[in-house]
Image 1 (spheres, protein in one colour):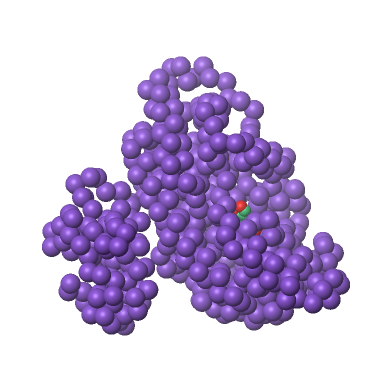
Image 2 (image 1 turned 180 degrees about the vertical axis):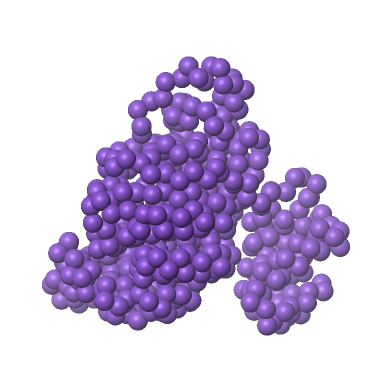
Length: 497
Ligand SMILES: Cc1ncc(COP(=O)(O)O)c(C=O)c1O
């Protein structure tokens, strides 16, 4: 097979191989049923590592282009079957939201999700959490056996254990973010990082910019703080920067909260140029940025370095977590805080809870040291990519043509935008009666309304995705065909997700 590699290119070799094979298939040079070269022979002829070929073939398989047959190799699929559309059709109206100060709603959102999770047989599209690593008990036992009890019995330092801080600093370097272990604070999940940073930057009555939609746990902290929230709409490229500038100018906010990579809930990732422009605006208006990267590491394709990597003036605070890649129950997250901001935040961390659980820190540390984390991430990405593919196919098959959705290149969920006037809460209740749990739009918007949409977690067993999406698709089609007349008689249920 003739594949010309551009070894100086910034595009990784495995993606070059994937794209070249894709082109060969599209041009007809490779036909349905053709066998791809064996991993070993292609690796030898291209003089690359076998793992590079495996990564390229895995991507092709996850995109439904080829199929692996046990012991025989990889074969081109019959592409007369409609292949999945990988173009996002997401294009919401661009309305800025400035809600009246509201009640804090996190509890009302969180508890129903937990209850749904406990229901046997429930297909839970509302919960974006990784499949737990199989070897975690083994690693945990080994970690605790190795440690002298003296290490985790006494009170520890508020910033966390030095070994873990060093490991995280090393890990961040691979994402293009060079930090020193002294810039890190280990937190009880990134939720605590959000609290610490928001409490540091925001006083009651201050204006704060968030993306609309955004993570409801962040909205709730701001509501609890008495902040005034400005929701700047998301476009397919990220937060609308023209509107951002207008509101930076008119309202002089004290903080911009942004989820740059696999945004919750849309799944979108901003490009490098969007990150540069956002930082430039924040610098121009002297407004700090809180960059939440809760879904880091879950990428199917390379992602640009975080905004924090571009920050020369210590205006960006960065948050990460092991909740989405390992287990939320460990409650291990971290903040990167540079410059003068560090001291006040670390003093607050000590006041909150002394420090993050030493046992959890030791377990994460052992996971990172053993090399299991890297392997686990590779597996997670491959599984998630396949699940995303199954979900995209199911959406095309079962959802009404009026629905538009994002096509994330990583993370745990995608966002489906639905026609106006659909009684989403009623559809949600009917889906629940058929054992399908949905996270609907209202929780993710600062005004608790926004536009009709749902966030769908794709990190589920493939048969659940197929079944759940077909149930929801039928409901949506039924309500769309009923038309507006009957729907206008509909009384919405009290707000809940
Ligand atoms: C964007 C975002 N930030 C922060 C969190 C909090 O995660 P944790 O505290 O488990 O790290 C979540 C949880 O879903 C999230 O989606």
